[in-house]
Length: 361
Image 1 (cartoon, rainbow, N blue to C red):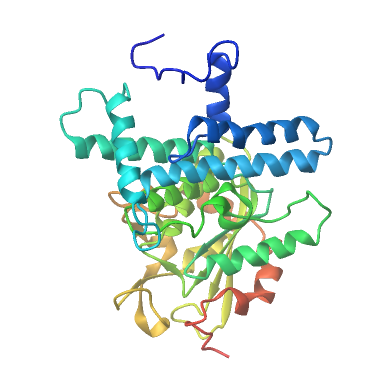
Image 2: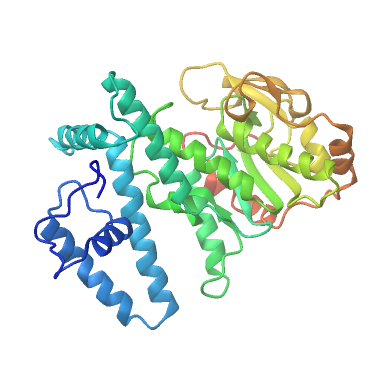
């Protein structure tokens, strides 16, 4: 056994639980910070028994989702701070537990800067959590958002999917149908913190995996500091460009961007489909916090000429590829909105923020 490897608990001798079995179970059912070995075993045993007894695929899926939720949230608890008012003492235990792991992690041994080691541990954990997350969406069903109430959108997507036979999902959205649903709204989102990094990473993964006719719904246009503008959208478009340049049929074939109250236009809602996206507005805010109305925004450019500033566009890169081959492909595609568009247009009122009502009638 390597010197840095964790010792098997004394209670798990070779007659009770062989070491490889113990490791395999720890990987499947991560042990919580405040959970003793005995408590962990008592929690895991009924799940294993239920898995063995389960005959219906649906039951097996339910247990698998429960375990994915437990694993993702355990990882998040390790790197995202607690609210001390709600959970006094937990933050100190989290930091102590992380320090122990960091000091014994062979990748971090010998670190002279504890803060740098903690930062590296956080980054590695974010990568691990993102890599284990399932962010797949159905063909022509992926829905992205920017500047609207993503939780209300998630509710609507779940409702739409309920109209199909059990087990079938026709529309996919990050907080509704991917593993992000297990951690959404459970932690504080602060720009640059671990929860934000995780969200940005899995959002990019969702964009990479999107296929068919993709849909986005945004408020006032594409804002200059959103993940969608700087990472998801350009990543999708540049993947398309690369595939088209190689003579390969792109996995993402079409794009509809639904803009609620687009800046500079009198329209209540406007759908930009394929080559139309080049004229979609990009905006920045003129107030502290998120804008309450279009009056708090300023139009910067049209999407076709806009250069991003962060994420995938770090260092300055056009959000929309400028190659003539790619632009010709966009112009050749029909301007038929995506399958999700009629449902989104019907439920527009339900997905905007309560403090940002529609102003154009």
